[in-house]
Length: 394
Ligand SMILES: Cc1cc2nc3c(=O)[nH]c(=O)nc-3n(C[C@H](O)[C@H](O)[C@H](O)COP(=O)(O)OP(=O)(O)OC[C@H]3O[C@@H](n4cnc5c(N)ncnc54)[C@H](O)[C@@H]3O)c2cc1C
Image 1: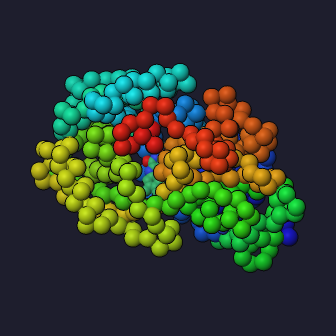
Image 2: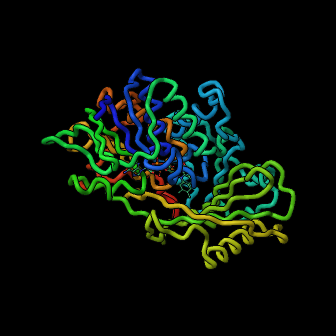
Image 3: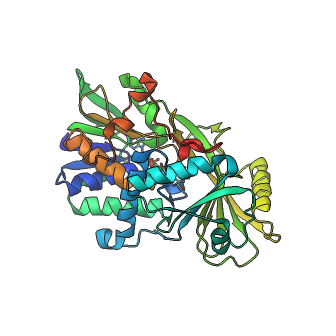
């Protein structure tokens, strides 16, 4: 039996960010319990896109907090965490131009540096793209992509250096609860750790983990497929491109390849996170070939070089739960719905706020936005400026 002030279950990027943020606040009697290794869950599958383009203001603000940490990573962590500031461009169709402009105004109001640019400027950034079907574009010079795995390691290393204990191979089999308050956790090896606060950051495994305690975090686990392509032409330095007409995102890879991901969230595929097909299906590959061919007609010699898949933990509004629960001392951070990398530094900070103060320290990021009870209340966290087809994530 050991004791800690805070136990964090799950050593993905959110658990690691929480440990780091707590250590920054002087809370270092913290134990992170990860049943495998740090970052080995869905964090290791992340596309790592970094942008602040969110219609939900609190998320836009969280993304700016994340960006500031990524930009200063050398200074903060003393290491390259894989952040590549390529810039980020998002293009929408005619029917979404008003939403885009309204969203940009709301983003600027919380400090996002973003601007509308025209097709001729996008053509300079992405010379191979057919831009004719787009109605408007937004540009974030500070956007790009990162490496979620490396970033999780950096959080863990920094937290450990501050005194946090990180135990890998530590499978938590149950919460210890006395009356209406959590008192600790039990591990598969029979040991128990007592703590006044337990943070559950178990990603796609969260719903199942919490059901025995009457806590329903409504999470649907869905499979997402990624395809890498050698474009067959020299593309030079290109930014991340979110194509909300063909509903795909394109990210440069080191070495000249491109990563294609899906932004069509209208027809998702349920999955078992412990047993899912870790490659793209023939249908998905075919669909990618068509979408790529439509957007990049000059890629006549393109070749598929690989594919893989990961799972999203999707809530009913495609936004996370970062919340206290009815069990005193129990905090949940899960349901990141495929966009939890870029906001992770802010998630860690909000968790630390909830643990230490019970409320958010950043007025742009009210903790109530992410409360678990919003689903039961029917008060979902949705963008006021949705885009057709891909609204939920932006
Ligand atoms: C394919 C894909 C692409 C993505 N692309 C982007 C993107 O471009 N931009 C972006 O911002 N976000 C993106 N995301 C989302 C982002 O990567 C995730 O939201 C984030 O990594 C989730 O981190 P996590 O810590 O919540 O979960 P995880 O990384 O899954 O960590 C949870 C951890 O909990 C551990 N665990 C579970 N149960 C227990 C237990 N009982 N005891 C101990 N440990 C336990 C697991 O082993 C796991 O390591 C993407 C996600 C995927 C899958």
